[in-house]
Length: 282
Ligand SMILES: [Zn+2]
Figure 1: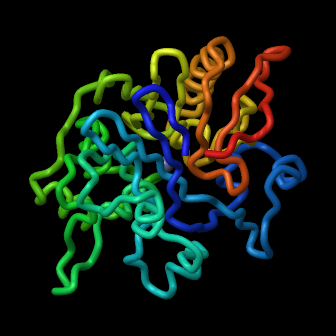
Figure 2: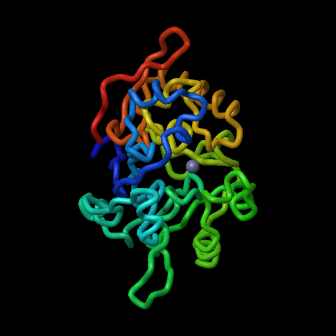
């Protein structure tokens, strides 16, 4: 946990899963990426499901919800979903909070490994919100895309989840970035998917950026290391360049949603690339 001026910050975890290493690194050859994150015998790399919890004033803001628990045996095996050591609700409890304490959930986007944990099956067998009292913030253009995704990315969304989320009446659709709470700002990016929103938090002197799927792991700090999943890789490239230039200049702490080892680090600019500092624990 980081205690900044008027802002407390936790990295929570929803356990782990795994995705194809080739898909995670796009055009980068395996001999290069596998030195950074090793693949298993099915070519999958281990992935964290790291969420962010921010407490400021009377707000408790959760950013992303992990992959959740509603997966078949077959899907659990395909994605190597592993909640044995930790899941989001247990991780939240370890930070001292219950699901009903969360006032706001920011969904960076609706890919299943970011929004899957927003819903859970209740004791009655019905699908309901995990964080039942929270406003769920989502970009309107992203919702429209997710409801009619392309053949390339339809498999990243779960239609039933999106429908149930919208039926809850607790989604606040947003048009563009801007302030979510004092010191906490949403930044909209277009490269990975339509209107992903990442989160920047500052106490006035220190700034943190939760990178979402713009920079999913520290290995992706290299500008051309862009996921094969991205809809507009050249837009991702410029978004990374722009955000990382500011991060290096202003000493931002970067939090990685999917890095299996590095929760956060700072960067410095060197010869047009961005070099990570030593990892920072949160
Ligand atoms: Zn994504």
